[in-house]
Image 1: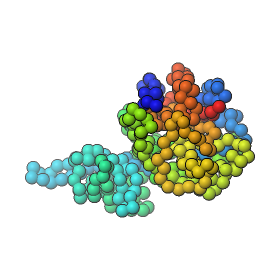
Image 2: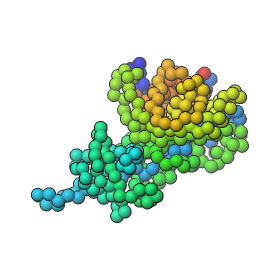
Image 3: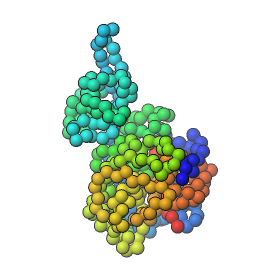
Image 4: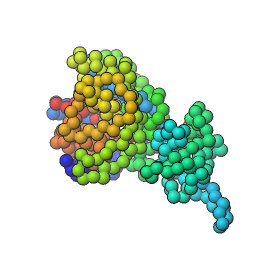
Length: 349
């Protein structure tokens, strides 16, 4: 398989920079049984069966983007530099790994000031990332970060506009509760309270798992032979309750439909032994055509970047030819793409 096999031309104007409002009013491309239907997300209770189970990622996005200043006094006098930081994940040492731009402007042991409350010292570098130690920890750090930080919008949105206060609500699911992600599980952004209530009334089951989405989800694939690509690792957990609910649905002949590629990757990581089990740890599972799905019967997901690992995942689920047909339909019918865009419900034959 070549990287070019997963490429397609996407008109720039189809990249969404704001979500639909209300959330469930986004368009939904329903692909099942060889057909394609143009629906709305709020139609899900009509489309799904009472025996179906949705698997939802309850990770919470932190306002991981920070803008600060480094001040220095040298032989030429005082100077300062603007420093942009994207937090990645906390380390056992108490530091945070982070992307810093420009990292070359910052020396070890220098302080970056983000606000009157929040500062950080550069303690080291590793593989192009910075190790930052903040002046606050625990609840104090969370409160200061909430004030100083901005939502870490994907690069294709950030290139068009800066994050603002609307994104603090828009880029978070309504069930977010376990803080740690630096990117949202965007398929879940289409759910609002009214839709959840309608799905429950229909009898559709819902199970929650946690996968902290990392910035690596936006890293490009740089190898032409996609099977040699190394995936980034992300921490996740499938609880005993979630594993039991999913297993019971499978045993009863119901369909397990993860909402988002993050939930799919996590439950397939937890099912590598042949059936779903409680699971916790880092997963770098890479799903491309030829993958043997153990538990997934369908997927609700947004529309993905050309030549991305997520295009490879949906191609694995539906088949490369079928996905090309689906994406051609989406482009022709002006569906909105990527994190704030429209959605699809993919049910393989």
